[in-house]
Length: 228
Image 1 (tube, one colour):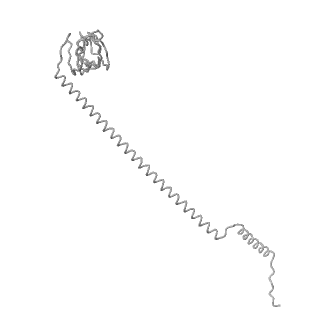
Image 2: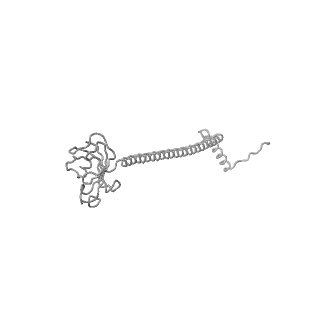
C-alpha cells in the first residue's frame, strides 16, 4: 500500500536502453583513446585558419619578390642598352674623327705635291721622256749600272688616269735593259726618298703594244726610290 506501481518495461524499450548505454560507453572509450573533444576541434580549426593565413602571406611575398625581380631585370636591360648606345656613339665619333684626319692628311699631302709640281715643271729628257721631281730625296743620285729599288704606279696618259700596274717593291739595275728605256732615262739622277713623275711616249715605252690603255698609248709613271 502507498507504493507506486512501477511500470513494467517492454522488451523493445529495454533493448533501446541497452543501445543507448552501449553508445555512451563507446563515445567515452573513443575520447580516452585520443578522439578530439569539442575544445580540441575548435583548436584545430584555429590552427587551420592560421596555417591558411600563413600560406596566403607567403604567396603575397613571393609575388612581391617576383615583381621586384622583373623590375630589376628591366632596369638592367635598359642600362645595358644605354651603355651600348653610348659605346656605339663613341665609336661613330672616333671613326668620323679618324676619317676627317685622313682627309685632312690627304689634302695636306696633295697640297704639298701640288706646290712642288708648280715649283718644278716637267723637263724633257732623251727620246721625249718627260720628268718632274715632286720630292728630290737625299744622298747621291742614281747612276747607270746601279741597283735601285722603287715603288711605282703606272697610269694611262696622266696622274689621274686608269691604273695599269703598280708595285710597292720593285728592283732593277739602271741601264741594264731590265726595264723599258723610258725608265732607264727617267729614273737616272733620282736620290733615295725621291719621288718623280715620268711621262713616257710609245717609242721609249711599249711601242704599239697594248698594255691596257690602247696601242701606242702614252704612259704616266709615279716613281719613288725606296732603296739603293
